[in-house]
Length: 359
Ligand SMILES: Cc1cc2nc3c(=O)[nH]c(=O)nc-3n(C[C@H](O)[C@H](O)[C@H](O)COP(=O)(O)O)c2cc1C
Image (cartoon, rainbow, N blue to C red):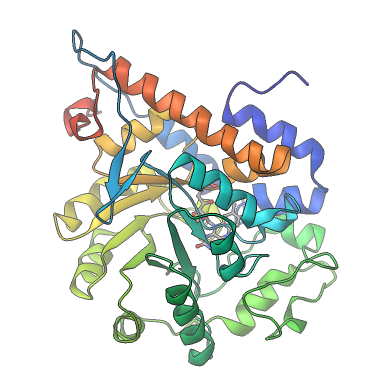
């Protein structure tokens, strides 16, 4: 095929290179994939009202997240098993994000240990935490992340049980020989064994992650770490208020890329309510369906501090390893720069609510 000119076209290239089981694991969503589709469509439905005759000869896409600079208002979302896309897995993402000056959020279920990811490149990094029923396993992950220099804990709160991703059931998703959950070895490896017409991941999650998690767990995490807590998977203003009361530093408006509750609200539609509830007590980030620089600019105009991208960097990784991820981040930077210029905004702080056409 001709060389991809945007993030969406990169998916087709990645698809050619990936085994069906892996492609379906990355691409899929829960049940009928309604929320998966709506995530993107909701960004596409936003309309912008640009200003003109503004000097945009120098556009600066940099901003701050949790008080520290990032070259772009974009981070790579925590996605499990990067090693299924490319042998370099999370290390390749570490090098590409460090070179681009953006934050990498590393998943609990990475195929490279969190220490080895940190050693791969000197960039900014957050650790995404899934809470295990065994609190000592959770505590040890937190301590290791602190020791390895991770700047924040991104606690994913929308997986009391794994959503039913029917593509994973159909393909019997499992890890091929040699690919393991490197942060958790040798703990609970047997639970990831392949099953006929069932997702090994679903069995693993439902056996080991804690479905009784509630706000007390956030207080407990605060008591065992000084790292700022970022709650990922918030869609309601009421939960943003609780997050602030329980001492979180930020929330990520997310429906897990349409992989958990199918029929849950698209993240672009949930964002305004969460931004309003957060006020100036929390930073608000958002992910789900962001595929264009104009989507990033729209998210910022709606009050997000930054966005996360999931599948697009996985496609880049599958297509061409570190260079593929670099290409995704470069392409997005070019698109954000052009979108800001065409909106008459030379700096991120100039991207305000007046850019959004209320419909
Ligand atoms: C293959 C895959 C694996 C994921 N694994 C995790 C994970 O381990 N932890 C987590 O918090 N979110 C996980 N997510 C959700 C992403 O962090 C993010 O919320 C989502 O991908 C954003 O939507 P997008 O893919 O449309 O950009 C995963 C998403 C995908 C596609």
